[in-house]
Length: 319
Image (tube, rainbow, N blue to C red; front, top):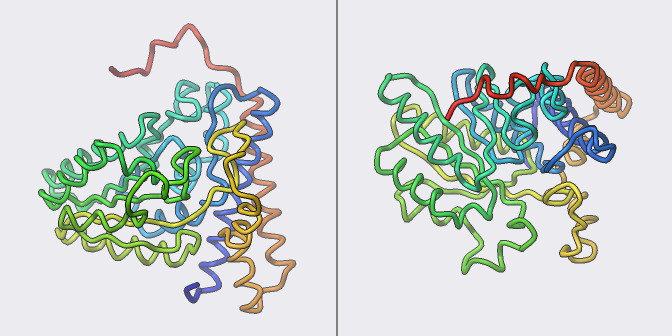
């Protein structure tokens, strides 16, 4: 684990707590069927979102997978707006039209989730090309899972970005499962970052549960991209602590895997490191309690908001 700045680490811990508690609140509301439809949670992967977004500027663009609540929060999208969106409320970031898998918030540099596996990568290339044409020092970050690395759109996007030296960061959130199948069972070489060499761009694998390592790595490659040196592929190793989707029984997991993963997950690890740095336990508890209060207040406000007006369902849509 990398060394830390205590002030930054406390801010990171607070941000990761807010993401996790948001996901736990979404789970609660989904169990009550207050939230309808498919929900994919990012519990255990919070360091990727907090670290990566912390390395970018406010002008950069983020394109996530359908497991995107954490990315949205890291981009500064209010918890109330996210929850209201999932609840189908008028106050949702997309007026209740996007739901869990397809919402976006361009005002925060979050250009949305995508339910087509790997589809965010070519869209991010378009954003990067736009920045190049307009001579704007923007970077586009596109995130996808390890399973998406076998999608043709990902390969085409990487080739296109590398050929044109576009300012794109390809972030592979490798939680070791392509939906319900271990990624190692589907490829000859499970070190996915090695594929970058075939496109002539940098590729590296890092500990995706170390928020400081994530921030430093993304900052390095974002700086390269801004200077005109082109894209990079960063494989961030992590583990989701929940099923692929809400309702996934996870019977495919080997016995003891989750128990072991919980020893390495980002919040517990950062808390342990802060304790070792001399931060008192009550201070860390206060950080979590403040985050809980924030999410509970956001949920109450979202639940009190009016449902989206079905008569306006065809408005605010583009085809």
